[in-house]
Amino acid sequence: MSNLLYLVHRLPYPPNKGDKVRSYHLLKHLAARHRVFLGTFIDDPQDEAYVEAVRAYCADLHLVRLKPHLARLLSLRGLLGNEPLTLPYYRHAGLQDWVDRTLREQQIDAALIFSSVMASFVERAPQIRQLVDFVDVDSLKWGQYAANHRWPMSWLYRREGRRLLAFERAVAIRAERSFFVTQGEADLFRGLAPESAGKVEAMCNGVDADFFSPRKELSTPFRVDERAVVFTGAMDYWPNIDAVSWFAADILPRLRQNWPDLRFYIVGRSPTAAVQALAGEHVVVSGTVPDVRPYLQHAAVVVAPLRLARGVQNKVLEAMAMGLPVVASRECSTAIDAVPERDFLTAGTVPEYVSQIEALLREPARSAAIGTAARRQVLARYSWDAHLAVIDRHLGGST
Image 1 (tube, helix red, strand yellow):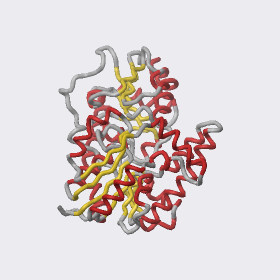
Image 2 (spheres, helix red, strand yellow):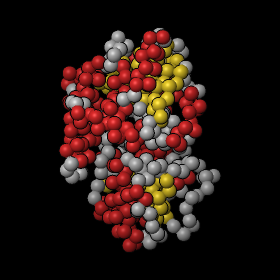
Image 3 (spheres, helix red, strand yellow):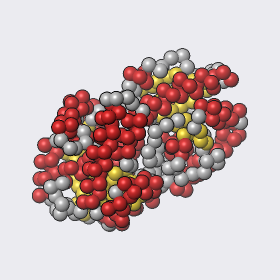
Image 4 (cartoon, helix red, strand yellow):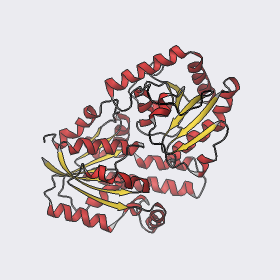
C-alpha cells in the first residue's frame, strides 16, 4: 500500500456539488488502494459536521478553515504581481508547513492535486511525482464570465483568465499526468498548452447509481395540485444563478400560459440574494435540503438551462440515473455520453425549452421512456470505478 498526498481545495464531503462529488469519489477510490494524506480547506461552516466522516478515509487529515470574505480581500494581493487572484485566495502558511512536513517525514510516493491551484503547495517539491486533476479548464471560465459582465469586472475576469492559464500551463509541465473531466476538455487544454499535450488525458465522472435510483417510497416535497419543474445545484455558482434567473424570467411564464399548475423549484445550497429574490407564488427556492432525491423522484421535468457550462454536469447525470426526463442546454449536453432525444432532450432558445418541456408534459409515456433510457445509459457508461481506473494506471491500484 503506497502513501499518497491528496490536496483538495474544498473538503471532499458531502458530495452535494459538482467538484465535491468528484473529489469525494476520488478519495473513496484512493483510500481503498493507498494510505491517503489529505490536505484541504473548509469554506462552509455546515461542512464541519462531516469532518470525521472524511477522516475515516485518511492516514492523516489537515484542515484549514477558510473565511471566504477575508480570502477575497487577500486575493487582491495578486494585482500587485503577475499572478492570478486565485493563488493568494488559497495561499496558507499552515497548510504549506503541513505539506512540507508530510513530504519530509512520510515516504510519499505521489501527490494527487485536485484543482490546479493546489499545485502551489508542492512547487518546492519537484522530486515528488505529481498527478493533477484539473477537472476542467478553469481559466476559460473567467473569459466567459468577462463576456457577461461590464467593466471593471470584465477587465478583472479577463486578467484572471490570462494569468490562470499561464499558471495551469506551468503546473501541467511539472505534472507527470494531467486529467480532465471529458475528452473535449482534455483536447481543449492540449490546444492551449501544446507543450504538455502528450501528458493530458480524460478521466470522466461517474454516478452513484445505487444512491440515485428510482425510489417510489420517497415522499413527495410537492403539493398535490402542482407539477414541479426542478433545477438542482449549488446556488452561489454564477452559471447556476444565470440559468435559474433566465428560466424564471423568460421560460416559466411562457410555460404557465398552457400549464398554470407548473411551479419551478430551485433546489440547492447557498442561494444568493439574487436567487432568493426569484421566490414567489410560482418559484420555490429551497436552500439546503437533507436529500435532493425526493425532489428528483417526484419532478415532472428536470431542467439544466445553463448558458455557461464546462465539463460534465453532475446534476444532469443524477437526474438521469433516477429515471427522470431532463431538458438540458446544448452547452451541457455536448459533454454527456448519451443520445439526445432518446436519453435526454436539448434546447437553446426560449421557444425550444417551451416546446421540449410541453412535449414531455403532454406525452407521459414518452417522458417515462426517456427516463428509462436515461437510467439505462447511466448504468452502462457512468460507473465511478470504471472511470477512476484511469488514475490507477499511473498510481498503481494494489492494496
